[in-house]
Amino acid sequence: MPKLELEDTIAAIATPLGEGGISVIRLSGPGAFACARPFFTAPSPTSIEEFPANTIHWGKIADREGRMVDQVLLSVFRAPHSYTGQDVLEVSCHGGLAVTKKILGLFLANGARHAEPGEFTRRAFLSGKIDLTQAEAVLDLIHAKSDRSLDIAVRQLAGQLSRRFKALKDLILKLLAHLEVYVDFPEEEPETDVNEGMRERFSAIEAEMRSLLDGFGRNQLVREGALVTILGKPNAGKSSLFNALLDRDRALVSDIPHTTRDHLEESLEMGGFYVRIRDTAGLVPVPGHPLERLGMEKTLQAIAESHLVLFLVDGSVGLDDDDRHVFEKIPKEKALLVLVNKADLPMKLDAAGLAALTGGTDSIRISTRTREGLKELERKIAAFLEKETGEEGEQITKLRHKDVLEKARDAVRRARETFDRKESFELVSVDLRDAIEAMKELTGEIYSEDILDVLFSEFCIGK
Ligand SMILES: Nc1nc2c(ncn2[C@@H]2O[C@H](COP(=O)(O)OP(=O)(O)O)[C@@H](O)[C@H]2O)c(=O)[nH]1
Ligand SMILES: [Mg+2]
Image 1 (cartoon, protein in one colour):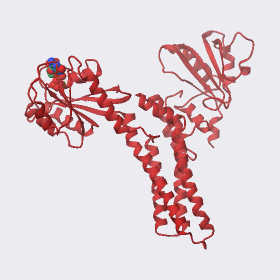
Image 2: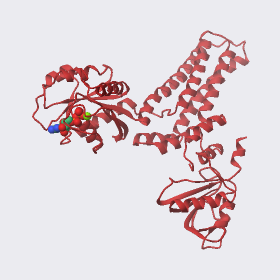
Image 3: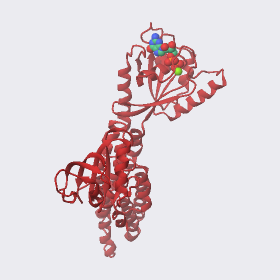
Image 4: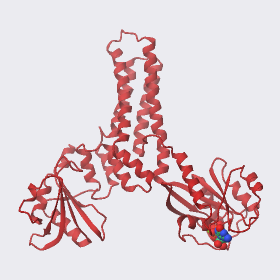
């Protein structure tokens, strides 16, 4: 049934719509060459249908009436050696809106259908060029906002995560094969060491599933960004720090307390990580203005959501009850960095008092004015994220992976429990087969149209 989807020829603009150096219009399908032929002329007399695979040709695109549209480069790919696994043509024209749309229009008027979002990648999947986790990696690669995310997407696209899934599936298959020997010969009572061997296989499978599932939260941190919140009493310099980290004047800074009412959030890259940094309204024991109270509620919410809190104190004044009040609002288990700001001014802060308040947490001296200590702060934030996300192996990246893997895990658990109760191996193998089915869903060996529709609807047109 899905093969039908591959029978027509699709076309789309593959570059962002707007003005730029070049734009690319992509054609894929059995009719790609026939579709472009009437419009493209090259200086050589060869017809485009004879152009060899993996070649690029300079030429002109003209409409049916022979009016020149643009000078272009035509890239030629032939099935199965193309992105989609089909015949593919890519026209690189000058990057203007009118010219790009005009060329697409010519193709659409000559038999091509406008591609759906992600349809080129969907075809790559349907023709077996990539599996489902690799298709998902294409999207992650496009959306990657930091070196870290990019790295994960590239490895997943290269098939590393799929290999880990396949290895896990093989472990389950082997266990099943082992069991079935005894299903076929029920009179053979397994020896104790055989039982022991099977128990070990169960543990290995369950451990691998746990490890994959554990990676999900860490990976989310890498992809969606770590939330880092700046906290401190009014006038500590939170907004100044926010601006200094962003390297621009994003938040209003003034020596009037409570200048910041709402919290602001901006993202930046720090040590290869995608970080969402938040400036907050100062917390005071007794809010004066109603807006102040609202601002503080938002600050409390920001603390709860944060992965890391930057507790900022003003070193040019002594530690006071306002600082203590702010510190009390930080839950004990929150990851924390203590910053002493305004290091460019004479220090009045009592270091021992600060250490007593923060339970001996090391502090970093900074000045948002001279930028002293900011590099060290960025290093510390990156080191924290390094530790949180871990370096090891491939990780699952999608909610879909997590859901399907949990389904497989539950099936394996049921199988193991049946096995432990010494019930018939036939019952054990029923659950193991369910686990294998779930593993096949993970890589897309089995899939439904609905799953593909959801996955590819997130893509842009032309990808
Ligand atoms: N000397 C000095 N003044 C600073 C520094 N950081 C902030 N300030 C000043 O402290 C005041 C309060 O800053 P602001 O960022 O609005 O504080 P917030 O209320 O915590 O957001 C402003 O007048 C800033 O110019 C610093 O590192 N050194
Ligand atoms: Mg502020």
